[in-house]
Structures are given as structure tokens and as C-alpha cells.
Image 1 (tube, rainbow, N blue to C red):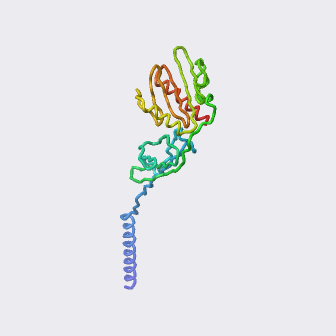
Image 2: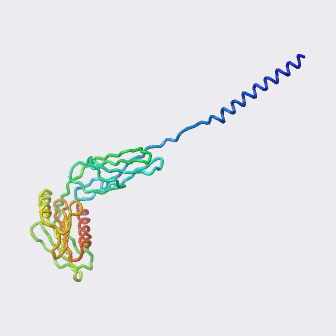
Image 3: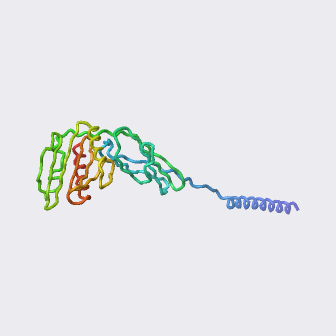
Length: 247
């Protein structure tokens, strides 16, 4: 009889232990651990070229923003507190003085980050002999024949080239101060122009030639051609690139 009680007790203990293990197993399988992935904000960043810009040159702001989750990003640029555009990267000409550029990067979850850079734009002043600043044969190509190379005043120089019936004329005038050059350049806007102003400081006029006129620091530069506006713009940019190297 005692032996039967022991067997019965052992059976009860085994059953209780089995039920407890089963409940624990059910709890482990029916209540899984849950966690929600965290989305990280983007990291806004841009670089500036040149690092020490001048007012006569175009400044490149290259977007370097990233996102830890590789989310697609939207961008907004602000220059001196004013909205500029929603472009990926921008390039601008800015006046002499201190400027602030801000880039705001936003991912598709609404997270955002901003990068702000303050920098100084210096004034462009060219001291070189004005005869060295105009377009020369090596600038326009050896197919062009020089037909004029002379001073047209103490601080102005003129060159001209021909290639068959095509002709390029280049005139560069140097002023004692940037302010004098600015005031002289404003006079061009007072005249009726067949072409609207393009860019920050370029205007286009036309007579027998198409003229591209622009200010570069304390210089007033003019490139004239008897072909097309596109040709005149091309050689005006060649002159501007040359002046960038000089300064």
C-alpha cells in the first residue's frame, strides 16, 4: 500500500513538472520579442571651390550629403538667409564681403539636417599691364591671324584677329578702382539692348558685330564677333578663364 502511494506521488510530481514546462514553452513561443528599426537622419555637407573666392569668379558649392539608411534625399539651398533653389549642387557669383550659405537635407521619412558655412569673398583687382590681359593668338587659336594689336588709351588695349571672313575683336579697359569699373559698367544697362542681361555681370549688344561685355574686378572687357552670339560667348569665357589665371 505504501509502495502504491509512492508511485502515485511520483506520477503527480512528473505531471506537474511537465505542465509547467509546457506552459513555459508556450509563453516563449506565443510572446515573441518585438523591436522597431530606427531611421537615422541624413548628414548635410557641402564643399566650396575655390576655398578663397573672389567676387569676379563663380563659386562652386558641391553637395556631399549622405544618409546612414541610404534613403533618398531632398535639398534646399539658402544664400544669406534667402531661399535659392532645390538643386543638388549650385554655383554662384557673390559680391565682396561676408556671406552665409546653408544646405538643408531631408530624407523621405521627414528627418533633416543642415550644414551652414560662413566665408568671405574678396575683391578682385588686376594690377598687370593691360596689354597682357587681352586675347592673344595663343588664346584664340593659330588659325586666327592678328590684324590689330594696340593701345586705345593709357589704360585700354585692343586686339583683333581674322580667319577668312570671320573676325574677333577684344578690348580690355583697366580702372583705378573696382567702384569706377562698376559705375562704368552700369552705363551699358542704360542703353536699349537687343539681348537681355545674362548672368550677374554680362550684357549683349549688337551692331555690325555681336558684343559680349562683362566686368572683371576693375576691368571692363568686350569681345566682339561678326558670327554668332554663341561664338562671342565662347571667346568671352576664354578671356574670363585667362583673367582667372592672371589674378
